[in-house]
Image 1 (cartoon, rainbow, N blue to C red):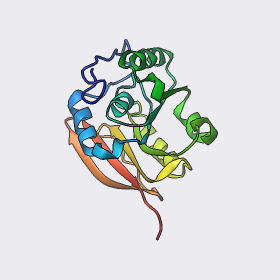
Image 2 (cartoon, helix red, strand yellow; image 1 turned 60 degrees about the vertical axis):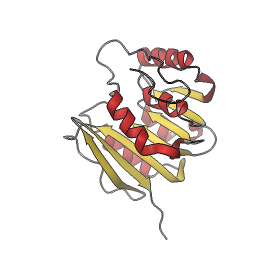
Image 3 (tube, rainbow, N blue to C red; image 1 turned 60 degrees about the horizontal axis):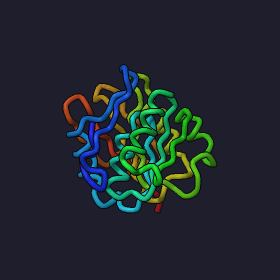
Image 4 (tube, rainbow, N blue to C red; image 1 turned 120 degrees about the vertical axis):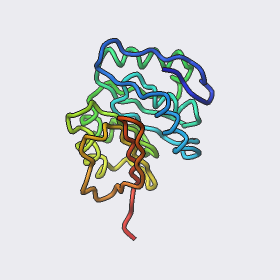
Length: 187
């Protein structure tokens, strides 16, 4: 695992020992960030189920103003903090050591402002992507034009019946699918 582009390009990231996390493959990360493009510049980025922090760190490296990392696993948190220090990006990051649903249920814990881009790659085969997207759909801290990106296995169910987030794109890379949801507003 490494930072692919931007100010921390080429820096290697540590992995969490064991099988508790599943880091994003470099080719999927490149495709994700090529799709996000200029949307990252000066954005507020939220990395849910952050693991090692590889995705949020990449966002910071490519120009995000700030990234918030939400992770509850103590071993992952330790590695995440080490990766932020190693890349020199810790000053623009907030690490929230809690469960994603506690975080989403307490908007005051999210700090000031709204998030422009949200990335989530929850543990597989537990229905957590659907549950998280249902909560994000009603979450008050998404910016008007927010984008939420879900990484999951193509065999898992897709979030459906969302009132405020609409699926606008999906891209498959082997056994990984990225689902792109945009915030929609009634006219």
